[in-house]
Image 1 (cartoon, rainbow, N blue to C red):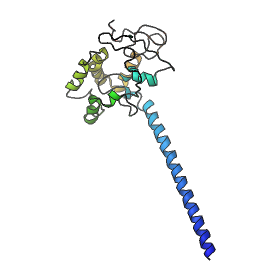
Image 2 (cartoon, rainbow, N blue to C red):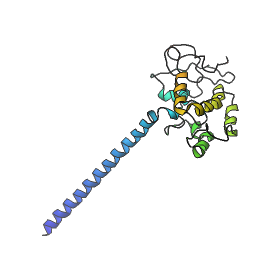
Image 3 (cartoon, rainbow, N blue to C red):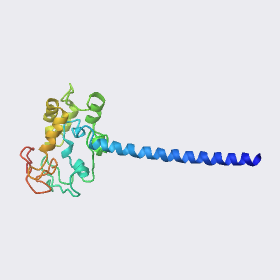
Image 4 (cartoon, rainbow, N blue to C red):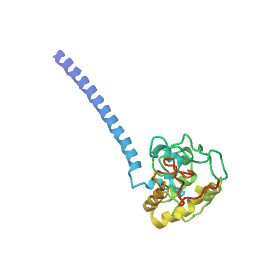
Length: 210
């Protein structure tokens, strides 16, 4: 009888340990795909709406976004090597990678702390400023005037277009506008020419004062 009890206890302990191990493996397997699904949502989701930033910028032309999602393994910037008035040097975002303002993924440090993004996230239905009654507020006007960068001058006109066109259509429009007119490679805000074929930037983009 005692031997039977020992065998029973041994089987019980062994079975419990096996069950715990299986549960742990199952939990790990479940955790993995959820991360993958989250990353897929960034790429697919509702088109590329996450590239329509809260402030009105098009994230698809941001050097930090293109550093992670740009076409081709190497994407050299053709921005000016030296800082010119209103134009940052070619290395101004070196080392930064981003998935887009409203992606829910990786954000560049300055985007994580952006008070425009955080305020819109808490007050606006679609987390963007385009339908805000306070527009233009001090948050966005201060950023537009800070540094005098030409791409920031597009914030308010872009927000108006988002409101008129709808976010999805606006993103499609911007994606096309920020492509090389010759080969179709995505271009960043301050590329003077295509990093792929050398074609000058489209006349649809704001001019670079050199």
